Length: 630
Image (tube, rainbow, N blue to C red; front, side, top):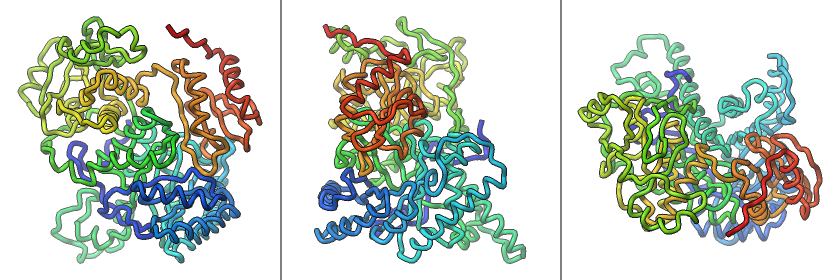
């Protein structure tokens, strides 16, 4: 268990947006109380200024507020001037961000032409060869010193030119030094970013923000939570040092202590420049495409937004970038419009029943419902309503992997208001375990309501999760999908939930499909092939969209097999840590195939690569022939 003193959110039951200092990216403010900003990334080749300008203008027209573009080398970065000039000549002032990996000289060129630079601490002047070695403190310090030597010139240029920066750690690209000291963990991601932040602060630079991206929503959520908790610890340490420095009577005050830092409010305000309250960029990297990509993004991004974390978001889909914008807009809309203010507050709540920094499924006893076991370590079943069951009863044998398993009206589930102490006491006095859920019609946020339920009922009782406490969902399927993924997915990633039901989507088949896909994306119930597919960008060495669809068509029947489809090596080997097999662009029209993180086949012609991937899967005994269609 993580230390109970580690906190990322002041109140896990009542929404409160995290307070941050503002960061200016051109004319767009991130953090500091500004609405959550939506951004995306160009898929066009950075060397093609005309295509990049056209795509950037389309993104801005769709509502994208910041546009990112890759700059692999210094020569390529020079073309950012023409892209910027073309966008401005069209009357568009959308800020540009240069995405930098590996090349400090590319960053030094890019910063001349863009409003913001993104650096990845895992591969910016740092070694990433997946080498295993023991670092002495001296060796570790020497590599940090070298990295600082390479990074400081960029920081100074950002100060001189008034540029912003994102210190963006990816789970898939931690340096060898970090990997060998901290492992491929959320802590390693956080420590990697903090090293760069300390260097920036030492130069008096504060116009930056953080990100902690991963393709696994559980890892992503834990990393962001840990980052925020560590940033608060850094703030407390800085304020403590200042408090001791001012060791005299003038520091005494009758102010109420600031709840975040434990010092009087006036003292904290007076020394606000010491705080590590930097804005947060949210994203699930390599989310994939279609419903799967949207669900995985909503689980990661939506759960953090619900806890008040996040000042700008990018939804990474393996689709044309313009399709990312409406998804991001739907995710941030409730918070930009102030919807949480419409919920009733939860008062006098106990501590949550789980460790927010360490996933463990909540313990419960097994309950058998209509012949289906739920609770304990049993598979999480999918419930539906009698009305929906009747609507699909005639074709249940044709529903494939999306069959309903339990009718809620026949389940005997107990519906309860988690604030009702008398009802909670009566339930807990029962001799046996009972399936429990939150009562419909309550004006409580779904995630908080189930957190409270899990904290107040005995562990023996399994819990049925609902996507909404309002019987009527939206008329918009995508809205229902994102809401369900946010609410149910967030709780599953915290280990809460033994069964699920999606009520907000009225269409029977679609509600069942959403249910199963959420279980898959949260890593709770793997019932089909799992794909980790990165979004296209200017680094991509093949057409990701058509290739991903081709691989899906050939391998989509391999239940439980995880396949990564990566356009280049920037995050590929690392993000494939959890994948069984990888398909990675190694050079133009050439593919490298991986088993886990290890490249085993090199420079395969793209036309042959899918068949060679199938051969590789067969070699490792994971292949089965697809069932013959009826």
